[in-house]
Every structure is written in structure tokens, then in C-alpha cells.
Image 1 (spheres, one colour):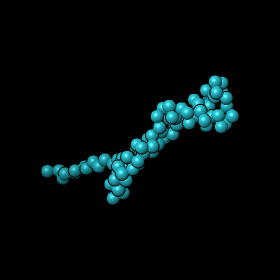
Image 2 (cartoon, rainbow, N blue to C red):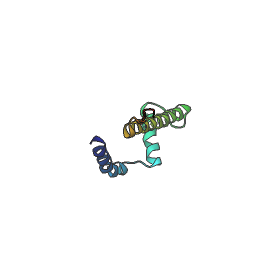
Image 3 (cartoon, one colour):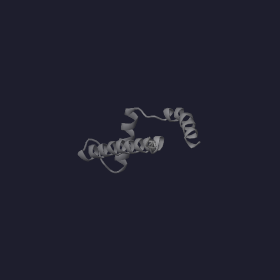
Image 4 (cartoon, rainbow, N blue to C red):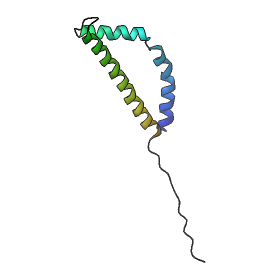
Length: 89
């Protein structure tokens, strides 16, 4: 019963999530603001490293989320194998 409910909720939430996506330009600007807030100056190697770290963290989080979703979606798989024993004739 839990899986159909979670699928329905995911389908209902999908349009809302689609409306909140950022363009690459918006994401870059937000990352630059974040790094500038940490005190890094635009055009420096430290700023470039900060931007790279933010992107790598984002990708790692996406991989982690995808792995969690895959494990909860399918769950463990059990294979049943029947063994039929016949009396000797």
C-alpha cells in the first residue's frame, strides 16, 4: 500500500518541482553570490575552487539522492525456487 501512495505523491509533486528549476546562468550567479559571501573575490583561483566545490557537492548529492530513490523504489528482490522431490518408482 505504501508504494502506490508514494508514486501518486511523487507524480503530484513533480509539476511543483519543475517550476522551481534554475537555469545554468541563475545557478552560476547564485553560486558566485555564495562564494562571495564566504569572502572570495571574483576572478581569483580561490573563487574558482569554491565554485568547483559547490558543483561537485551538488553532483554528489544528486548521486546520493538517486541511489536512495533506487533502493527504496525496488527494495530487496526475493527469488523463489521450488524443489520437487518425487518418490522413486
